[in-house]
Image (cartoon, rainbow, N blue to C red; front, side, top):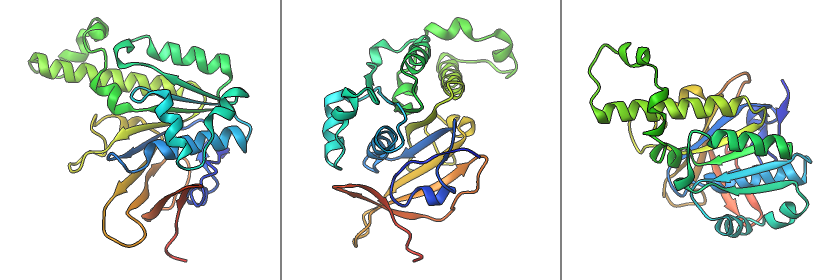
Length: 250
């Protein structure tokens, strides 16, 4: 299988050389676990070390905030933006529509993007255009449930349908894509939207637990289609020179 190496120290050996090329991977965790920094290093390594054009799409933070965060782990995004190897794109939540995926598709094709990050799916789910796509929900989809849909339930159905379609369309772009998302503290589902975990080709889970000692963050590969992946929990360290995934078995 063709691989897209992340270049993140200690990670690629967990997936036999990198992420499956062209896969769409969920990067989930609670706030502060390092999802954004992991994503930015993945893209920067792509632009600098592997000569792959990369794009970061944020639905939450300003681009200046993203650049500032990156500097904290020694990443100079501006340099790669200037040479055209890295594109940062902010889509305000007020501008989310059914056509957002078409906008992303156009930019990916125009810029010949190979690595893509969308941050975050949680924001997309909360602010999904619930009312505009209701006309696109086929009557048979609703009637198949053989139950009466109150407005809140119907709204939840439409949001999940939107998330499913969004991820399905992302997978057709041909990029090796990371999509960040918020993980619930508890519950039977890995993601708050409860549907993306089934569509994605892989799931990387980051967690934070203050226990003292050197490591408070950890990484676990919960799913990776098409390749064998390490199933152990590994400490994740955020340093001034980037992210390091440790193997305590050594």
